[in-house]
Image 1: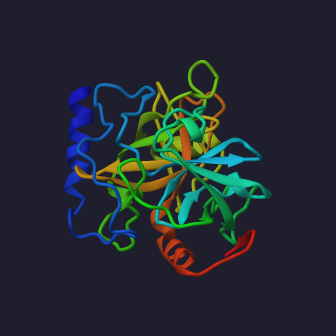
Image 2 (image 1 turned 90 degrees about the vertical axis):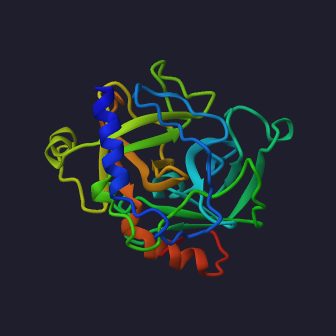
Length: 277
């Protein structure tokens, strides 16, 4: 089994044209090693130093969802995390979920001045589940805080990537939210498998991925589904929804289908509350 996972990852890399992609922020994080361990798929603590782009959404003074820093001014997350919310802030540089900003080295807190929800987001069926948070001030990049890579051209074909890593502070096997940031190795699932599990058709702007021994779970919403290219993580999905048992498949918003929307909305000078675009 281990050899099969290594082979899948090598095949994925062959479809990635390294060095040819354009990124939303060219300063997106380079890392020495990934969280990849082809010997395990179960949820496990993420490696420190490999996730400087991870964001924690604070809703009404408590943990709400995950997200990713994508530029100096914006965090990417799921629309369902921010729809109807009026008290939002973001923590960056977080590893331990309960660590207060004052006492945690490298953790910074930002108020949200604008929440942008995709105009076609449907809370009933979870389609177009993508949103952006504009921060009150520009983020200064450092070793603890740096954006994830978002591809803005056609250099990567998501359909050719079959192995992913997802990150979050969601519920673990104990059914409790995790104290530390967790990672889980996931595999692309066929449309037939996912249609059977969710009793509806998976849309073309969604990715279905899972693992029989570990999956994303409640509390992981808004966090990233990512692919490691040997130098950096490329975000390919956003945690949207899954099964109650968290041990099968889940649905992720396909970021590549929204790259134009992301570029347009991160480059506009917006000020407001919750808007739909």
